[in-house]
Length: 203
Image 1: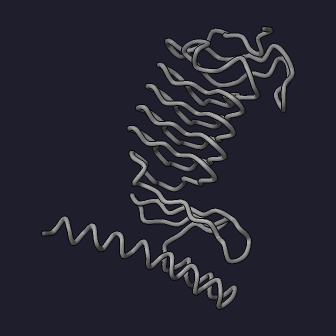
Image 2: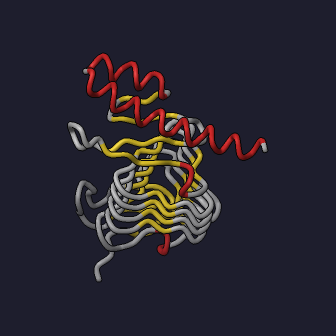
């Protein structure tokens, strides 16, 4: 197997810069990538790559066609797989698994035993430490688009929209009565979940 990158020295203790030794996907031979601790952190197969000043270290792994960008840090035993994209100031650690067509960005954190998969957007300051910390819904009434609610900050990501449930409902009603009604039902459903959990906690 011909390698797609090599390790080069860096000014960060215990870390190497990666350098492409052949063209693949949108990476060109000679391109400098992010940081790894060793070759186990980034697969030599597929189109996976670490860009900019992103760091993948310890026993963490990036493989398949996954991408890690900007100042993101992936460490411990975390894995980024399939077509997942991790960028901005995101931190992924523990035994967390990010896979599928997932986008994790802004200042989000994925940790613990959490598995983030499918067509999911995790953003803002969301913290995902278990599978209970987010829900992915599908817009079955029009576009078929997937959208995400995150528990830690109680926020919604729908296409280009990112905000509270109330803001989502208001925006949807401006678009159409049907959209408003459907999104309102889903937001109210999540609110009932939270209220039920709060009631159980206060007993």
